Length: 352
Image 1 (cartoon, rainbow, N blue to C red):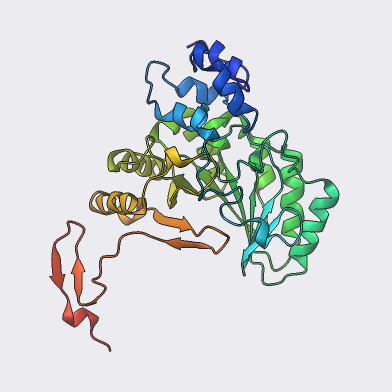
Image 2: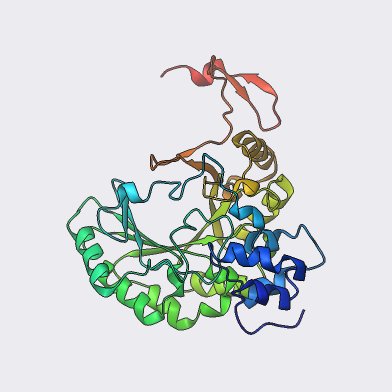
């Protein structure tokens, strides 16, 4: 493939780049009228047009099945709106808030749980007045220990704006942790410049970056270099991954991904069960399938490389771990080892 210089944003762009068949253009245009398209040059370069089941393409190239909404699917699957006291703030847990400062992304994942809220037409970017209102809310709530910048993808902001947000949060005494959620180091690594890294840093607060990637091929040399620029500036990274049918719903792929994270100095954090976002049924696995994969990973990976498998309870009731249980529910003295062999541990369970 010829190296692209611009982000692909229409069905015609995808066809012209060889990432979609000409016969699919009309169908993909219909999808794009509801859900935004964006495929960066870095992502396009990873896609194999010869592989109909390419796991990178599956994440970013539209599919007509996105227009099929199942009865259980919701426009706001994890209940952001129910916990939003002011625009841009989601206060679901007592000690932390989301600050959804921007509504656009460098790429649009086809399984996004905020797909009804993001994109160029979503009008989700906060104005300066709205940012000030959100910051005033954080200042007025001393229980807020952590602020999580999300959206959209906040790394789409200029270093100047990132620096301004960092400075404002750094001046709030009770906020101790600033966490940025992004896909940028993977999908547009050239954006992780020295200026952006400097803008993130705070002499008063601890800053984390949570990196979203779903397949080991996403951690290219350029992506690892972008991660290294953050790590070597003192910014620790954790990972987020979504369990996706046809992308990473097997132990081999997730093992390779988690090892790649650790090798790049990113601590595996969450493996998310797929949310009930509209038009995403073709991506979702069952929880039982996810648990089976987690059992397999426990046999293969050290604790350093193990993510926590979590489910966001639909409706805004919070995130809970749903990984396999190694203790017998009826008899806590019975435990299953990673290979599935049963053991009795009476002495280990006795009260002290």
